[in-house]
Image 1 (cartoon, rainbow, N blue to C red):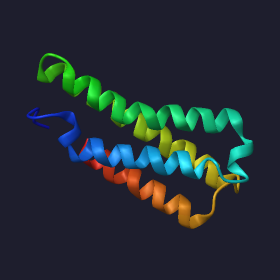
Image 2 (cartoon, rainbow, N blue to C red; image 1 turned 180 degrees about the horizontal axis):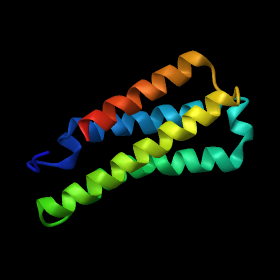
Image 3 (tube, rainbow, N blue to C red; image 1 turned 45 degrees about the vertical axis):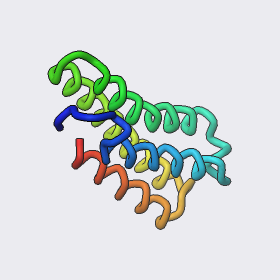
Length: 111
């Protein structure tokens, strides 16, 4: 991924911002909102994605940028696993699960 312009111009950054918004809205709903520890971890992993993209972009050099993108991609994998658990525990309906996991797969592909 080439570093030109601003990190706010990157499609993957904006897609991950949208993901954060969707996850924060989703985790407010019952019964997921009752699982404080799990929801906290989900929110932290979600916020990690755009944060690492931005931080890596602002670092000096493409090598560091690539390292931060790898960390962001790792957070995507963490979230995919967490949402598998949420779905398996019947804390999330199939439509919401599919929408979130589709977003995560698209962001992973971009990274």
